[in-house]
Amino acid sequence: MEPLMEDEEYNWKEVTLPSFIPVGGQPELERETGERRRGRDIIIAVDHGPNSKHAFDWALIHLCRLADTVHLIHAVSSMQNQLVYEMSQGLMEKLAVEALQVAMVKTTARIVEGDPGKVICREADRLKPAAVVMGTRGRGIIQSVLQGSTSEYCFRHCKSAPVIIVPGKGTSLIQ
Image 1 (cartoon, rainbow, N blue to C red):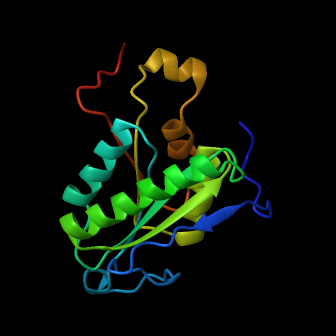
Image 2 (tube, rainbow, N blue to C red):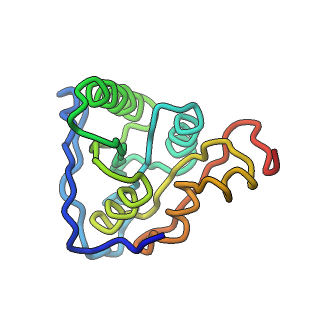
């Protein structure tokens, strides 16, 4: 695995969320005391899979508080594919509405072009969140070792925040 280059350019688009969803402002770089009142930034990496949705639900129920801001991150291979972008935008809008309804948190959404592991680590470096939450693909240990794993990559390379990997429902470690 090659290291993430700091000065490397990358493509991304902010997702415009429905107007009734409160949008979080710019993250603060210096953490102050009183974090409970001010809220935290939490990154949730999402895709179209059921394990990603399970991790999103877990984060809303077990991690998020009222003053927090959830940053939804979705990686795509190419921004040029309009169908993929529109499906991703629809997913982000749906999850943002659910985050407001379930946990009453502010939400931002960003679709980023590139390798998912590198994209998530780059966004964590940019935002300096309290946590990065992601699901697993549901493969066993042997398949993950042979084919690689986004969650494994983020666990090893995200230095800006703790990475919380939520296993899928009914997932066993060895398959």
